[in-house]
Amino acid sequence: VKALGWMFVATPVVGVLYGIFIHFRVVVAGDALATARNVAAHPLLMRVGVLVELLMPVIGLVVGFCLYQLLRRVDERLALLALVFKIVEGVLAAVMALLSALLLLAPAESAFVGRVVMTQTQLYAIPMVFLGLSFTLFFRLLRRSAYAPRGLAEFGMVAYVLMLLYGLSSIVLPEQVE
Image 1 (cartoon, rainbow, N blue to C red):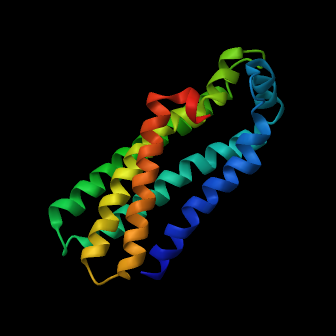
Image 2: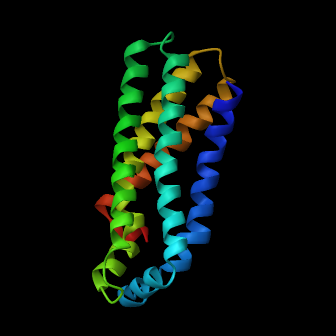
């Protein structure tokens, strides 16, 4: 349970560090060609980014499976549904990592590479929807159980509903979210 807690805390921290130290160092706002040149100029940084993008869904799936094992005694169907959402999120995030890896093979002067890297935040909105769904359900189950303080579980539910709404709004109104 302690390892689960550490993985649960580490996942968003690693995601934020990825954004600060990798994504935002490569992306040049509004300039796809300059972004593509940055991708070509920093291959090691991009490969580290791909590694992080691959590790995140793996850690997320382990967390999801552990939460399922813990919470299936509370409500097996709801815990299974949360796990299914978590698996969908993991698969989509792994596909995003594959896309990032493929971008390293494209020509340095490809504006397409820059455009894809620049829109990655919007593309990640799709797995974010499933992240919001899965953890909203997991926190609902934690609220019903005695495994976590009620207030913490309610805070988690609200936080992940907000993440779900942010993901949906990023898909429907991408220009408003940037």
